[in-house]
Amino acid sequence: TASLGTAARVENPELGQVVSIPVSIAGTVEVKGVLARVLFDPAFVAFRSFEVGDITQDAQDLTSPVRERQEGLAVVDGGSALFGAGLTVATSGGLLGTFNLEVIAEVPETGTVISVILVEVNTSGEDEDRDQLAFPPGELAVTLIPVFPNAIERVEVDRFPNRAVIRW
Image 1 (cartoon, rainbow, N blue to C red):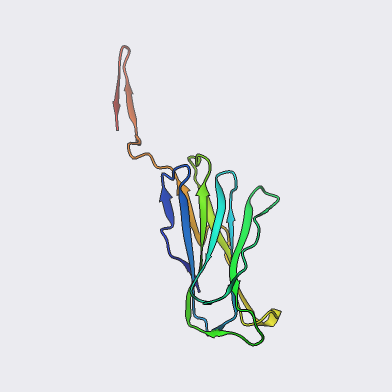
Image 2: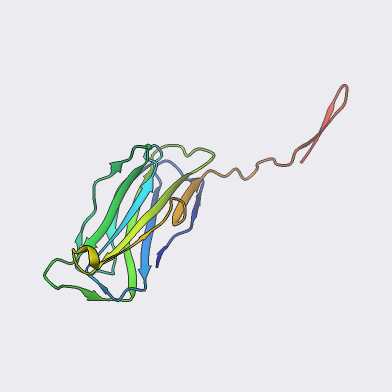
């Protein structure tokens, strides 16, 4: 299984704020390499770094360059691997790594979502030794959204010829 080690919602993100998203996995037995893929809107956030977690200690960082997709969103892979024939680690899970993304533009009222869409654990470079979990956008995610604490809701207006009464 995969989980995020942060709140699912960041309210009132500020320009320049770095949002850190730790990705953890559980239920593993043996690991050689791990990977997580994050989907985000590059109009509002920019990928800054990936920090390798503790599940594969002394592993090599395998962070990919950011890739833009046709729909205007972007993806980046963060992961790590142990190099050496037959080299694996016995583990029941842990921190895969932490993605750090920076808010670079004002977030719209509808918000923007940073989603983990793929998590992979492998015990070798062979396809049959890979376990992948795919998530639809928004399922394993952090939403950045502006919140207006004094928003006026459920407004009632009584109109009269020379005045109006407004209640909320």
